[in-house]
Image: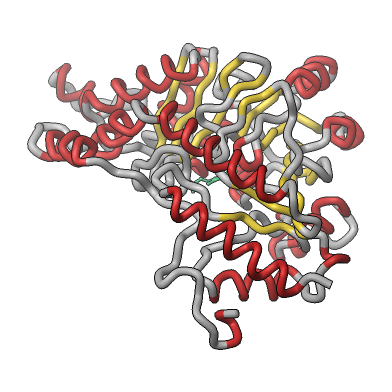
Length: 393
Ligand SMILES: *Cc1c(COP(=O)(O)O)cnc(C)c1O
């Protein structure tokens, strides 16, 4: 065991995720650097149109992070103080934080123990007369139960939002992620399905919502820099408080180039997942996440659940042993309601979402990215077998 001074499986760390850039991507960025518009130029609309067309949505709004995409969604829905928004606790903190940015209250919901996706039955239990929206997170890249969530949302006349930051390229009953909720958000952070450095997108059918979010990203001004330059005018109005959530043309050029590869990359991720699935089906102490049969998975993450009663150490020790082998495992996520901020400001804490809390103790994300070589996949499998066998009871 490397943790005890032995030889690690690999000589360098294999990360859990990383970007995949080509010379072609770099050339597209260079072209923008040589052009007139570094930001608020033609690449923004081009990227929005290509993205909308890729998922099959009417509108796409580019912003400078997945977090900005979530906040813009909450703004477009008109979330204000006193409003409640149901969010899963098994997610990245930004999903809930976006509600708080608008002074709303995130109401944390527990997950299904197999898939770790938000549980529609528990969603319905959390609805009150203050509930304005449900945010579904396609955890690990697997779409949530959208038909059930839609039915609940419609019955209570509330909005359905999809935090699809993990799930670009996935499908639910033949329908693409990005078209499954009223507003759908994406992130282009380097670990996500496509990378722009920092970046995000919202897709929707409503032109009105899209325009609201386009204004929000530019300080809620009534015109942008390019519009003013083209009209030879200087005047702009400000009717609301906005932000600078603009995504530059440099980023959009990279996004456009990366978007062309999503389908190939998703196929590669599925191939890797298949290898992992075949291996872990043979191991008693490791259980991959549950898979729904009416979806295709984007495999942003490949998450295993450890059977702790069959192991002599906890997840923390397994994590350390794998890192010592240079297998870059990670943990997604610490349930958001267990974070100090939410405990202090919203009175959340232990016992609120018991399934997520228990799952958190046993999850590990394994390396998963499209440029992983077959040898890398073999290293992960060997590393898991080595460490798990060593600590098996
Ligand atoms: C990455 C991520 C975000 C935030 O995206 P950024 O681009 O990092 O701001 C939000 N929600 C989920 C589920 C994510 O994975």
